[in-house]
Image (cartoon, rainbow, N blue to C red; front, side, top):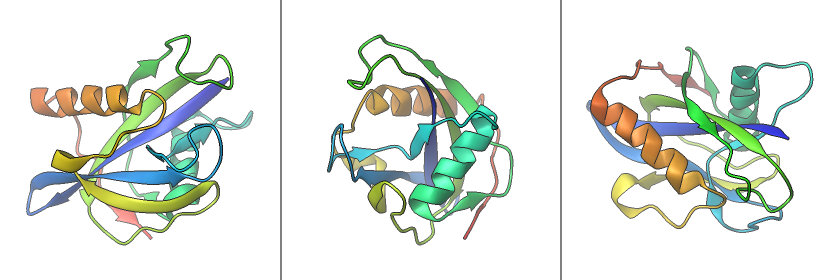
Amino acid sequence: MLTADCVVFGTRGGVRHSLLLVRRGGEPYKGMWALPGGFMEMDETLECCARRELREETGCSLSAPMEEVGSFSRVDRDPRGRTVTVAFMAEVGEMPVAGGDDAREARWFPLEGLPPLAFDHDEIVQRALQRLCRGTHVQAGAINN
């Protein structure tokens, strides 16, 4: 199974200070916080999947290209079975979000106070933060509601 996940950092005044997360509405990890994301459909690219899942789960659409963070393929990363994900990231201005599709809730969290995350999403967030700290990222643009 192939999935795409979105690491969306909120910025204010040029300072990165928050991360967009969704509360899972179904198993596995029902009720836990996670990155927006989900399964790729047969007629879409990974980036299109990431954009669709972000829109469905938070109500937001990106207006610019997303940057690929990397692939995550640990054998036990998803209890439903063998799943590989490719994560994408963006830095955007914070805005209102709302849970949709299989996400019960969507919310911005301060980077200093993230809740426990489902799957291996903490590892994905850490890799994205490392990339940002190295300065090897591209500003992704704004989110449009």
